[in-house]
Amino acid sequence: MQKRTVIATIAATMLFAAQAATALTPGTAAPPFTITDTAGKAVKLADYRGKYVVLEWTNPECPFVRKHYDSGNMQGLQKEWGAKEVVWLAVNSTSQSHSEFKAPAQMDGWMKAQGAAPSATLIDATSATGRDYGAKTTPHMFVVDPAGRIIYAGAIDDKRSANPADAKTANNYVRAALTQALAGKPVTVASTTPYGCSVKY
Image 1 (cartoon, rainbow, N blue to C red):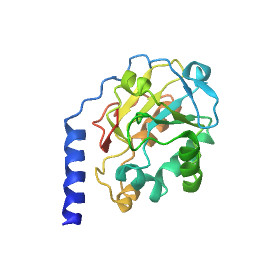
Image 2 (cartoon, helix red, strand yellow; image 1 turned 90 degrees about the vertical axis):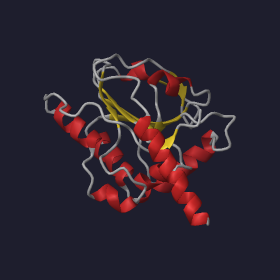
Image 3 (cartoon, rainbow, N blue to C red; image 1 turned 30 degrees about the horizontal axis):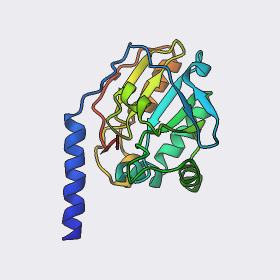
Image 4 (cartoon, one colour; image 1 turned 180 degrees about the vertical axis):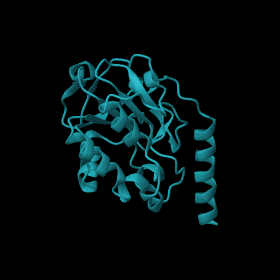
Protein backbone atom coordinates (compact mmCIF):
# COMPACT_ATOMS: atom_id res chain seq x y z
CA MET A 1 0.00 0.00 0.00
CA GLN A 2 2.82 2.36 0.91
CA LYS A 3 4.51 1.70 -2.46
CA ARG A 4 1.26 2.52 -4.28
CA THR A 5 0.99 5.78 -2.35
CA VAL A 6 4.53 6.79 -3.33
CA ILE A 7 3.86 5.94 -6.99
CA ALA A 8 0.61 7.91 -6.92
CA THR A 9 2.38 10.90 -5.36
CA ILE A 10 5.09 10.88 -8.01
CA ALA A 11 2.52 10.52 -10.77
CA ALA A 12 0.54 13.46 -9.40
CA THR A 13 3.69 15.53 -9.17
CA MET A 14 4.58 14.79 -12.78
CA LEU A 15 1.05 15.68 -13.87
CA PHE A 16 1.41 19.04 -12.14
CA ALA A 17 4.71 19.67 -13.87
CA ALA A 18 3.32 18.71 -17.26
CA GLN A 19 0.49 21.20 -16.85
CA ALA A 20 2.74 24.00 -15.58
CA ALA A 21 3.92 26.65 -18.00
CA THR A 22 7.23 28.43 -17.73
CA ALA A 23 6.41 31.97 -16.61
CA LEU A 24 9.55 33.59 -18.00
CA THR A 25 10.31 33.04 -21.65
CA PRO A 26 13.72 33.07 -23.33
CA GLY A 27 14.74 36.54 -24.48
CA THR A 28 13.27 38.28 -21.44
CA ALA A 29 15.42 39.97 -18.81
CA ALA A 30 16.20 37.83 -15.79
CA PRO A 31 14.58 39.41 -12.71
CA PRO A 32 17.19 40.91 -10.37
CA PHE A 33 17.54 39.43 -6.91
CA THR A 34 19.57 39.59 -3.73
CA ILE A 35 19.43 36.36 -1.71
CA THR A 36 21.46 35.22 1.28
CA ASP A 37 23.50 32.08 0.72
CA THR A 38 24.07 29.27 3.22
CA ALA A 39 27.13 31.10 4.57
CA GLY A 40 25.10 34.22 5.31
CA LYS A 41 26.48 36.22 2.39
CA ALA A 42 24.18 38.35 0.23
CA VAL A 43 24.36 37.22 -3.40
CA LYS A 44 23.16 39.54 -6.17
CA LEU A 45 22.44 38.42 -9.70
CA ALA A 46 23.76 41.81 -10.85
CA ASP A 47 27.20 40.88 -9.50
CA TYR A 48 27.52 38.31 -12.28
CA ARG A 49 26.70 40.56 -15.23
CA GLY A 50 29.12 39.63 -18.01
CA LYS A 51 29.02 35.93 -17.14
CA TYR A 52 26.71 33.04 -17.94
CA VAL A 53 24.61 32.07 -14.93
CA VAL A 54 22.69 28.85 -14.30
CA LEU A 55 19.83 28.94 -11.79
CA GLU A 56 18.89 25.54 -10.39
CA TRP A 57 15.75 25.35 -8.25
CA THR A 58 16.28 22.62 -5.69
CA ASN A 59 14.77 20.86 -2.66
CA PRO A 60 16.49 17.86 -0.99
CA GLU A 61 13.11 16.35 -0.09
CA CYS A 62 12.14 15.95 -3.75
CA PRO A 63 12.79 12.53 -5.37
CA PHE A 64 13.39 14.21 -8.73
CA VAL A 65 16.12 16.38 -7.20
CA ARG A 66 17.63 13.31 -5.51
CA LYS A 67 17.62 11.54 -8.89
CA HIS A 68 20.07 14.08 -10.26
CA TYR A 69 22.24 14.15 -7.14
CA ASP A 70 22.19 10.39 -6.44
CA SER A 71 23.29 9.79 -10.04
CA GLY A 72 26.00 12.47 -9.82
CA ASN A 73 24.44 14.27 -12.75
CA MET A 74 23.87 17.64 -11.07
CA GLN A 75 27.27 17.74 -9.38
CA GLY A 76 28.90 16.79 -12.68
CA LEU A 77 27.22 19.69 -14.46
CA GLN A 78 28.16 22.11 -11.69
CA LYS A 79 31.82 21.09 -11.89
CA GLU A 80 31.93 20.89 -15.69
CA TRP A 81 30.57 24.38 -16.24
CA GLY A 82 32.12 25.95 -13.18
CA ALA A 83 35.49 25.08 -14.71
CA LYS A 84 34.41 27.16 -17.73
CA GLU A 85 33.60 30.17 -15.52
CA VAL A 86 29.84 29.66 -15.65
CA VAL A 87 28.24 30.78 -12.37
CA TRP A 88 25.95 28.09 -10.94
CA LEU A 89 23.45 29.15 -8.27
CA ALA A 90 21.31 26.54 -6.53
CA VAL A 91 18.14 28.17 -5.18
CA ASN A 92 15.86 26.68 -2.53
CA SER A 93 12.57 28.59 -2.55
CA THR A 94 10.79 26.33 -0.07
CA SER A 95 8.82 28.63 2.23
CA GLN A 96 10.22 28.88 5.74
CA SER A 97 6.72 28.01 7.01
CA HIS A 98 6.71 24.68 5.13
CA SER A 99 7.73 21.40 6.76
CA GLU A 100 10.31 20.81 4.01
CA PHE A 101 12.14 24.09 4.65
CA LYS A 102 15.87 23.67 5.28
CA ALA A 103 17.76 26.16 7.43
CA PRO A 104 21.03 27.39 5.90
CA ALA A 105 23.18 24.99 7.92
CA GLN A 106 20.96 22.03 6.98
CA MET A 107 21.00 22.93 3.30
CA ASP A 108 24.75 23.48 3.35
CA GLY A 109 25.28 20.13 5.05
CA TRP A 110 23.16 18.30 2.50
CA MET A 111 24.93 19.89 -0.46
CA LYS A 112 28.35 19.07 1.00
CA ALA A 113 27.27 15.47 1.64
CA GLN A 114 26.34 15.20 -2.05
CA GLY A 115 29.71 16.53 -3.18
CA ALA A 116 27.89 19.39 -4.87
CA ALA A 117 29.83 22.27 -6.40
CA PRO A 118 27.54 25.23 -7.11
CA SER A 119 29.02 28.72 -6.93
CA ALA A 120 26.56 29.32 -4.08
CA THR A 121 23.45 27.78 -2.53
CA LEU A 122 20.77 30.39 -1.90
CA ILE A 123 18.00 30.28 0.68
CA ASP A 124 14.96 32.05 -0.79
CA ALA A 125 13.02 31.70 2.47
CA THR A 126 10.26 34.13 1.49
CA SER A 127 9.93 32.45 -1.92
CA ALA A 128 10.00 35.91 -3.54
CA THR A 129 12.61 35.08 -6.16
CA GLY A 130 11.00 31.77 -6.99
CA ARG A 131 7.76 33.57 -7.68
CA ASP A 132 9.52 36.26 -9.73
CA TYR A 133 10.92 33.57 -12.01
CA GLY A 134 7.75 31.49 -12.00
CA ALA A 135 9.73 28.47 -10.80
CA LYS A 136 7.29 25.57 -10.91
CA THR A 137 9.28 22.50 -9.98
CA THR A 138 12.41 21.15 -8.38
CA PRO A 139 14.47 21.04 -10.41
CA HIS A 140 13.55 23.95 -12.68
CA MET A 141 16.47 25.34 -14.66
CA PHE A 142 17.25 28.76 -16.11
CA VAL A 143 20.31 29.88 -18.07
CA VAL A 144 21.07 33.61 -18.11
CA ASP A 145 23.48 35.12 -20.64
CA PRO A 146 26.14 37.79 -19.93
CA ALA A 147 23.68 40.54 -20.91
CA GLY A 148 21.22 39.36 -18.24
CA ARG A 149 18.72 37.73 -20.59
CA ILE A 150 17.20 34.29 -20.15
CA ILE A 151 18.35 32.00 -22.96
CA TYR A 152 16.99 28.71 -21.58
CA ALA A 153 14.13 27.91 -19.22
CA GLY A 154 12.60 24.56 -18.33
CA ALA A 155 13.52 20.98 -17.57
CA ILE A 156 17.04 19.75 -16.95
CA ASP A 157 16.61 16.92 -19.47
CA ASP A 158 14.13 14.85 -21.46
CA LYS A 159 13.85 11.80 -19.14
CA ARG A 160 10.88 12.80 -17.01
CA SER A 161 11.33 10.27 -14.23
CA ALA A 162 12.70 10.00 -10.71
CA ASN A 163 14.98 7.08 -11.66
CA PRO A 164 18.69 7.99 -11.22
CA ALA A 165 19.66 5.59 -14.03
CA ASP A 166 17.76 7.71 -16.55
CA ALA A 167 20.06 10.71 -16.03
CA LYS A 168 22.89 8.93 -17.86
CA THR A 169 20.97 8.41 -21.10
CA ALA A 170 18.97 11.65 -21.14
CA ASN A 171 19.32 14.55 -23.54
CA ASN A 172 20.50 17.26 -21.14
CA TYR A 173 18.96 20.58 -22.18
CA VAL A 174 21.13 22.67 -19.87
CA ARG A 175 24.38 21.22 -21.19
CA ALA A 176 23.16 21.70 -24.76
CA ALA A 177 22.15 25.32 -24.15
CA LEU A 178 25.47 26.20 -22.53
CA THR A 179 27.49 24.41 -25.20
CA GLN A 180 25.76 26.31 -27.98
CA ALA A 181 25.79 29.67 -26.20
CA LEU A 182 29.47 29.54 -25.27
CA ALA A 183 30.27 28.64 -28.88
CA GLY A 184 28.47 31.78 -30.04
CA LYS A 185 25.53 29.85 -31.49
CA PRO A 186 21.81 30.33 -30.83
CA VAL A 187 20.19 27.93 -28.37
CA THR A 188 18.08 25.62 -30.50
CA VAL A 189 15.91 24.30 -27.64
CA ALA A 190 15.38 27.38 -25.49
CA SER A 191 12.21 26.41 -23.63
CA THR A 192 10.80 23.12 -22.31
CA THR A 193 8.20 22.15 -19.73
CA PRO A 194 9.86 21.52 -16.36
CA TYR A 195 9.23 18.32 -14.45
CA GLY A 196 9.68 17.39 -10.79
CA CYS A 197 8.07 18.21 -7.46
CA SER A 198 6.10 21.42 -7.07
CA VAL A 199 8.00 24.26 -5.43
CA LYS A 200 6.74 24.45 -1.85
CA TYR A 201 5.58 28.06 -1.72
